Length: 124
Image 1 (cartoon, rainbow, N blue to C red):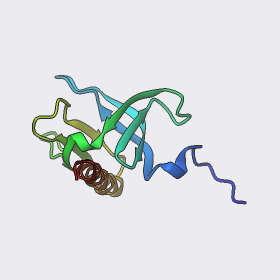
Image 2: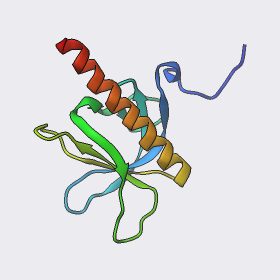
Image 3: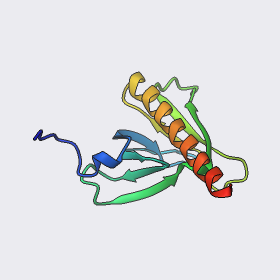
């Protein structure tokens, strides 16, 4: 049996890792967060032991995830854009590398599509 350093709940997460998340607001403080993508949810923790869940983001409330082009040339940022009519805020993230940014954008868009399909399945 292989022993790895992965967190306990890793098997249920499609993607996880450390990433900076903006608190929103005018100043938009950026904080390091440990984030897990689980099917149609993005679960945000304060750290890797996953004891303190800060928030759970339902991806079906969002329209898409895309690169965030900033005036200050901060690289590797991306944004979750809410669906029209949803009472949620756009969420900004910053990945440590270009590869991670692209990987998160792809994974989050897949999660959004899963969320939309889930709703569609319930409607039928």
